[in-house]
Amino acid sequence: MGWYDFFSRFYDRSLEALYVDARRRACEALELRPGQTVLDLPCGTGQSLDGLAAGVGTEGTVIGLDFSEGMLQRAKARVERNGWTQVHLGQADVHAVDAARLGQVRGEPVVLDRLHVFLGLTAFPRWEAAFERLWGLLRPGGRAVVVDCHAERPTFQGRMVNLVARAEIQRKVWLPLERLAEGYERRELPSRREHGGQLVLAVGVKPG
Ligand SMILES: C[S@@+](CC[C@H](N)C(=O)[O-])C[C@H]1O[C@@H](n2cnc3c(N)ncnc32)[C@H](O)[C@@H]1O
Image (cartoon, rainbow, N blue to C red; front, side, top):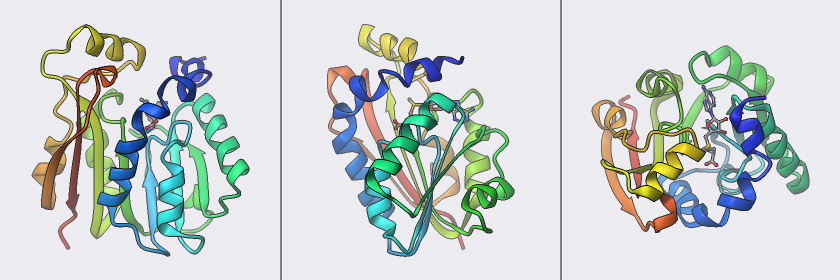
């Protein structure tokens, strides 16, 4: 069992309340429209699915992918509880995900309108390559939102976050999006000591 399979047992209890506001802001920044298709990677236990499913509506599609089966089991239970027929979940390594995998999980070929990467880039092993792979899946004109925690020199709390989340919050995870996107914008979100650093939201559009 991997660390995140174990962490999944207490992930929602420890973290759900802490990120409600940031998740709402991420959904707003995505500017979701009914009928669109959005990829949530890593989807974790599905804490972002509520806003994403509402944003694309029942005629849209949310694809949630994660490496950890433990996290996915929680996400699947959440989807069943809420009856979200537009949400499709599956296992994937961000370093290997491709259009064929998205199509497999969706059950038909997918054109990706939106990309949502929430607390992922500080956790992925090769985060810059991971982002470029995800960016490659987004259609021209599609919009991407990245939210993560950052601290150049983590405090004790930040080091605890790194330890517990197997993360590196020192990474400037917005830089690939800044380099690649049009209409790029970065905002600092309201942050608490428990986040371990400054919450950052970056948004941009893939050139057409
Ligand atoms: C801090 S959690 C964030 C989960 C979710 N995005 C959220 O906001 O709650 C980091 C997630 O990254 C996933 N992860 C780590 N490495 C991965 C990889 N190589 N491919 C896909 N997911 C990965 C973990 O399983 C975990 O669910």
